[in-house]
Image (cartoon, rainbow, N blue to C red; front, side):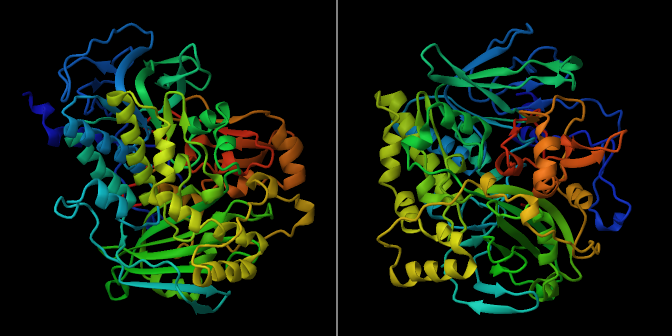
Length: 624
């Protein structure tokens, strides 16, 4: 075997560095001492070759789709033409997204192949530069699904080694904190980094023969003449802003699956198209999905303040009583703590800025005393599903299924969705295996889902989130009634309010919100935080944030809603800047994008469409 084909070499090659932003995020008020040290690549650095688990070598010098034919690790030689037309690779199972759901599905499918003595191929395509690079979550992890999937995870050294040691719940006012009974029941759970766990799951999948392609963005769904899904296509790379081909142009690839599973996470771009095309939400529980935006930092704090496994959740300040949300603070290992704020995206006031609300939170006495003297290691943001049971779509479409957070299985009162996402992936894998091996129907996934503990869990928690439509204190009263007296068996099912984008009121009906300037110690400006997210996109590529009507920002959003794009985005992608005539125009800084999807959800006129940029772009999370 050639030296570069070893497993250790392969893993190191998968984690390739991205060419840094030639104009890194800067701000005159930001001290370089507050930024983590990142060693940039020299501008003369040669293009990086990439070796994938499939045995294909991806070379930036290649003029076609970027794949060269070499001996595969889990397969035989595969002939791919070097012609500029898009090439096609056939698999039995294609999975979009290397997150908890997608990798659990891949692992469970390969386990069934081994149990039955059959050899079926599995491909996982991931838009992040490496597995885990786009994964962000709290995360207090419930190992229920992992216990079923990989019972020996402790012996196999999964990065799950900080059990919850204490569990507190506080109601915050501006200067005080009041203790409440904790409803979370985190006994037996663990404080983890989900991005690290996903990397470990990726290694377990590869050991079973799963082929993982990081750095490739699935940009389109492939259909046959009967409108059945037959695979996905990755986007072309090496296109300039105007769509012309650059010297490094590489044609996208078609990955065709006999069964296709979409595991893109919350508000997945292909998943949303599939659900609209086949009316899956109407065929399911029938209600629209609701969302929240989670903003998170990982800090390194003083050793005498660190209590591994300590868990804290809060409600109330800095949010107003009509806005649902709360904060979390989890003590990880190695003196690290995860601190974050979750804000429901059905908030009313267009002047609200979730990023600035998070900066305020860190100055509360209950949080400040812990963070003082510490250092921020990483920053990120991601939306999450909060619709729960009422918003579950019918997950099966011709040719495949939607799994994990793309469908929306987060348990809101638990503030957990990783275990349900993993279980949904496992159930879908079992149905996919039944389709390919036993000629069964993929609809068995829907039946299995309704008979699983996912369904029971979400059904018993179904009224928690809509109860807060009436405000903070009515919501607390109703949720306490259900949790402590009715034990998750209420006689009624509450409905969600308006879709998040419709909840935004016009600016004339709301009060402006003045936010304090960041102090550079506990609170920071957006450029400083973006630097800590390791976010990077090639500036010279077609825009992945598309305006359906380019006139709406200036004619509708700015005069009616005071330009909310400039505030709901936690990465300052959207800015209103004066043109040569002094008139404000929307400027889109797509290179800042954290792939959180808030814009796709919250824009009042649903004018912004989030699509995938070039594969490998976006944040580079390692401990989130």
